[in-house]
Length: 639
Image (cartoon, rainbow, N blue to C red; front, side):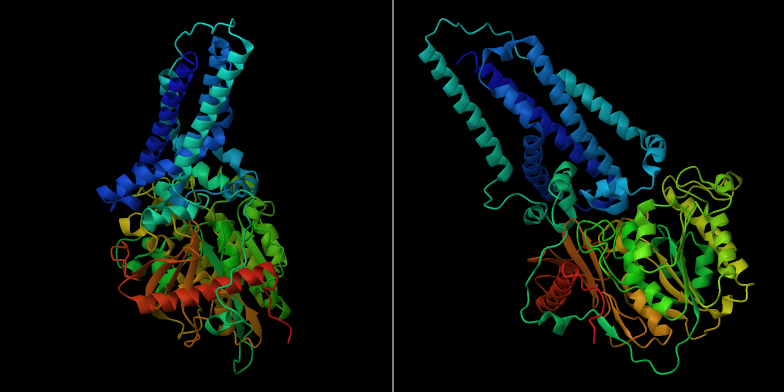
């Protein structure tokens, strides 16, 4: 056995290096996202490092099984230099990739505020070809990640414990003795596996999963405990939704009913409808709402003539989640986005399909490459007649931004011209593009738009300028005064102030309704509004009489519940009645006041009646959502 123990010793040293690498990548994740985790206490940080080891061991075992088996299997051949070199190469390659995934997600977390899951693979596939084109820009912008990663890998290669020269075990022993030694080595190898598996599972009866982390730390620190390879492998081939049964015999509909039956008086108003989706326009950038320094002077002036919701919330953190919410009132209450899920071909209610039945011409515009994010596929399912991408843009080579598509100024001018060519009434939507990484503006404006506290603010100013030029041109058309404009962001962008890094602030977006000929559509409203409210609100404003199924309500109906929904890091989040609740599918994790941007005061144990009421409502929403998705019943039932 003395010939076998050096292998055991070397293996454990190598394993400890891997644990150190994963902890270093966790610290790196923390440093890059310090504003998000800035209020973490020393005791909580120790818990993060300690319980994070459980997830690290799980991933190391899952991906390093061949290395572990080859390191510990019985046999003298393991002493050969060529064999040990092969082990070292295998060890370095596998774990370099694992650490790289963690490092990349350290930067990507700033955009979606969650550890990446398997849907990142769908995102890369649905990128419309941009992924390869954008790689040089990402490497240029985040060179330090690549540099630090290379440094760690080089250090790992040199720190990798070598196996001291071991003389060959004598083969003169009897066959019985050799078999006995091999048997003991096998038992030791199995024992090592058992110890490592026990560590990865802890004392848990159930398998380790993403939500297990909520048992160890506060909700806002869950991303720190996890590592990205774990969240990816735990969500691959996972069912998008499972049936839940919080209520029996349809009792859930007592608390929440997604079906709206409009009973408007008067004739239907055949006004044009234009929804402008502003890429990454956080509420934080809009001084008209925040009363602090902003970067949208034109939007501020437009909002002063609009009906604005100061507690506006996005239903997701990605562009791919915005379209179903805005046009169909469908939030992505699952790890996968609705567009990438198995339910994307379900029959759904849609603002486009309803207005098309009323005789509207319907169209969607996005300056990105056709196929980007699967937008073209979704809008077709949603009932839009026409899709306009960069392929349809007449001067795409001249006005291409070098990365994603057409610069906003030129594209919004083109959008205005196309609207003027459509027969009225029309329903159209444009999704702006320029305020997206890598945040480029046309060369002629390099001196006009200066760098701000974060990279995106300069491009926000440019997109705001492009929006101003659009409205200047639109105001001179014959259709302008007969048009309802809806302005909404797809999701938030880079946060500036710490409070906008938290779960409350990083979903706050501007939501506004503007009509040039409606003097009553003005002012600020403080009730909660979400992207899912836009479609039912537009129908209500137009005096629609019919039925519409969605997970939002009209902002013009004072009697309807006002709430917002999100799903992030495998838990649900809902804002309602002046509070925000987080829920893991079984238990309430926290309750905060709607103005507690920093999430300093968890009221879950103090406001139990409010917590219970919100939890009941949220359970009803989840059960209705899951059941209707799984049964393909996202349209009103036949009367």
